[in-house]
Amino acid sequence: MSGFFEDLYVDDSNLKEAITKMALSLRPKWHNYEHSKIMIKDMNGGITNRLFSCYLEENGLNTSDSILFRLY
Image (cartoon, rainbow, N blue to C red; front, side, top):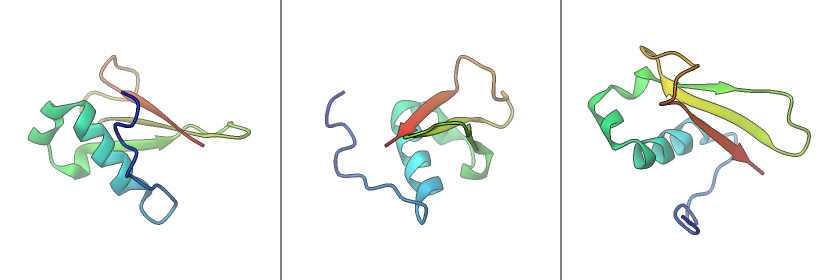
């Protein structure tokens, strides 16, 4: 998947939009849900990276369908 999202810039001003865009690319079936149902949780605790978990509200955080994003 190298370069899959190379044109996507992520910062605090577009964090939710960018993570949602990446999640929809990785989980095409999520297009069937309203974007407000796609949840993003800041996992805190990273020293040099930021970790975010992305999941569907109805499935909850601890499912095999959730996605972990690490941002440098």
